[in-house]
Image 1 (cartoon, rainbow over the protein chains, first blue to last red):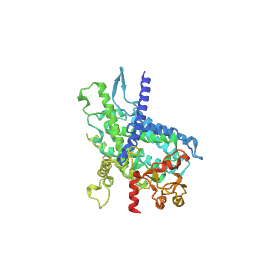
Image 2 (image 1 turned 120 degrees about the vertical axis):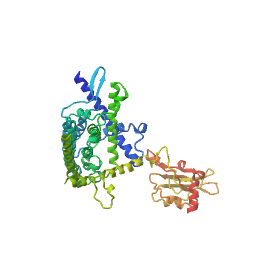
Image 3 (image 1 turned 45 degrees about the vertical axis):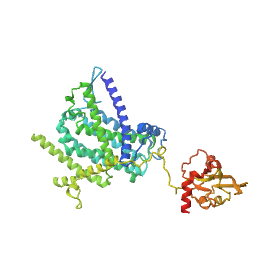
Image 4 (image 1 turned 120 degrees about the horizontal axis):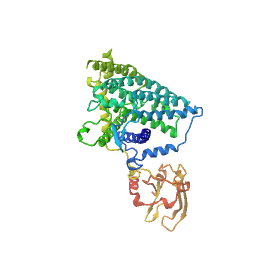
Length: 337
Length: 170
């Protein structure tokens, strides 16, 4: 029974997540259009709501082109690594408390791993392989440059990302994500306790997901399309989906670590039954995440791209010392209290 | 060292900025305010098939033959077909009882060749061929691209704007 529940949870979460990610793409297109005084896709279905389906249908029927001297096996493998890493990261993120469904007490988290955050850090660093291998295996100069950039960028920002999380871990006293969320009950959100950690983590998350101020691996004006220049059809769609899945997962992660996860303030004073409280908490988690995704999108259309040396300067000279400093101050405060 | 690191994270070093402008994050928020304020501005996009553009009278759309009182003005002099740089016009003349004595029995414009230069309109002594305001030309076969008299004849009332424009500017 335990296994069956887990399988159902996996299927449900995967399905919902793929749906959300598809609509994040639509959100990006509509929002960017609105920012540029355009309308954006509004023809397929009501207000363009079926656009993601049409896009996928188009990409399925596209020809899959592999460059002549490309390494066929790795060229096929790279998008699979990208998408599977982006999808599996969500496994440890708690998207709600417990829910009582058909007499079963279900925990709204796929896997409650006791090394939760380490699992996420390990998987997100695996994501680099997707980009780097795709760049290398394409046997083409622009993808190669994109791949090299992505590996350098990811490694630089992983450090400050990990260090900015440690502050949160020290407050919670656990690596488990559900513990971290429980500690943040009733407005004790980590964004209040760890403002500098929050900022460094958000900046590092932008770099990890290759979103615009740091989208050097695919910088269109310089590298054609970066690491996925030589990809087409469904393989390209996988990279595209992985990018938005990464955005969604990192938003979910920021929510979990800094914005109180599924905690909704004052929900217990409404006098609802436990079932509805759980539902509201899940919706609260989703709302926070989607707002963060919208923030990612607006930032993309606000800030221009960094130069490569500026990116490295920011990562090593500023982000890393700030993260370490934050760590020391947090440790000192915890020691004194 | 701590001081310098903190300063460089939170400040931009530019003398021409005021002290509060040197913070990174407030300026990023200002930038986001600008981008977000654009969301509520009126849109530039025209929803094309539903909302159509009305071209001005100086617009050179597809060339048409002017028809007055049910008769085309054309006297089949062939100047337009002579001047056409894309060789798109074919005229065959014939005689008629009317005062103008000649009329085109066949008048074809190959719209696949036409470059909308308006030379035919300029050269025409009778003001019989003018550029209309129509710009939607679609056909699915090459043969459909050759417009005969049936498609070209347009009553003068519909071309008032253009004729008026020509009278004032020629």
